[in-house]
Every structure is written in C-alpha cells, then in structure tokens.
Image (cartoon, rainbow, N blue to C red; front, side, top):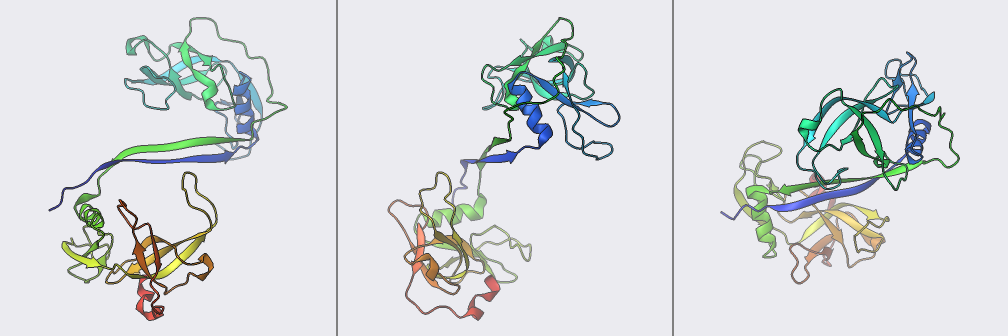
Length: 313
C-alpha cells in the first residue's frame, strides 16, 4: 500500500466588491477619522451601519456621526495572532458599543494581557497612520479612562467617496488525498493513470475516490486507464488568470480516458482553439519532471461516435 500523501495548500483570491451609499459613507468616514452609524426606524443607531432596517427591512440611509470612544460588551483573548490579523502581538477580540450607538462593532483591542480586559471597560479607537477607506483604518481599540468623546455632527457628505473595496481571501490548510488518491498521484509520477472499479456498478472512477459516488460502496480494485481519451465537452477560456503563464484563448475540456467511467479535466493543445470539438480523440503530453500531463493533443484518429461517450457528459 503506498504512503498516504499530505501537503500544505493555499486557496487565495481577491474579492472585489462595490459599495452602496451607506457602506461607502461609512468607509470614507473611517478614512477621515469619522465614525458614522445609521439611524433605524425605531430610533436605534447601528454601527456598523446597514442599508436595510433589520426590523422592518425598509431601506435606510439617515447617517449620524458617533463617538470614537465606547464600552466593551464581550471579548475573547487571542494568544497567537495569525498572519493578516490587526496586531502581531497577543490581543483581545472585542465587541465594542461606541458611545451613542445601540449595537457593537467587532475589532481588536490592544491590551497587555487577558487580566487587563473585562466586560464594561472603556476603550477608544486608535487610528491607523495610513488610511485608505477600509475597516483597517481603525488600527485597533485601546484602553481609555477619559470622558466620552463628543462627535462633530458629520452627516456623511464627502467629495471623494470610496466606491469599492478589494478583500483578499486566503485559506491555508494541510491537504491529505487519502489512500485512493495517493495511489493515483503515485501512478502519475510513473506517467500512468489509474482509477478504481466499483464492485457493484463496475464503473471505473478517475481520479479514484475510495468509494463509488453512485453506489456508495468502497472501491479497492485498481484499473489502469488511457492514456488516450475522448473530449466529451469543453470551454474556450478568454480571460487570463492571475499568476498563470498561459496565453488566451485556450481550451479546457472534460476528457474521458479509455476505460474510465468518469471524465477528468485537462487543457487541449496542439490544435487551434476553434477546431476543438466533442468526440476529438486526444493523448497526454508530458514535460520533463512534470507530475501530471501538461496538456492533451489530438491523436489523429477519427472522432469518437457520440454514443460512445454520451453517458460521460
């Protein structure tokens, strides 16, 4: 039995979001060291502001400035800050109800230790030196023993509003492909493709999953498939992906390898993109040192009959 593999994996992408009038004013205000809330139909002041009343669901937009001082309503100590968090030393995550508001804002609280934090403690905003119109314009909260600050009465009118933000989402984790896919990856290192046959329906699944997704029974019988296969369906990619050194347009396809009961993904090369078609017979192209085929190219065989692959669409 091959060794079960594992490796660190990162999923990361920038998420671009446009802002409505309320969120636009709120983030622009932070850039200008002004905290804006919104007044709901029942008279409550909400921070962070929302664009629809949480009780009536009516659109709201009555902006009001609130104080940069407030009270901790609850908190949790963060012993080990992670990459991208507001502070690089231990701190508290705290819900802070700013003076003049009826809801709490979640942010970091800079304190020397958990013994220095308690529900009901008074805090104030510590502003970031460089502000761009984001929640990170509040660097953190810090302990405060003075009187409540007086807001200036700002109504949320700005000449140069923030109209959109980019949030960088990232997930770091350790991936283990398990027994079946570890064997699949090990075979690829020998330029072979193996799947596993279901003992019930007799379909061969590539990549193998350790169990048949149709019958729900474990699979163990290894079957080598391919290396040739048939394009079952495809798409033409016209937008260049970031950090992917591949010129557009190119074709990405579902390829049913000979003997497989499931199509896998692969890039099609060696043929103009507008000549790729369903039924095209293809074979893998490997590059030196590669752990998987670089792309698939036409074999020169006649196209497969539709009936031969229609069940794999």
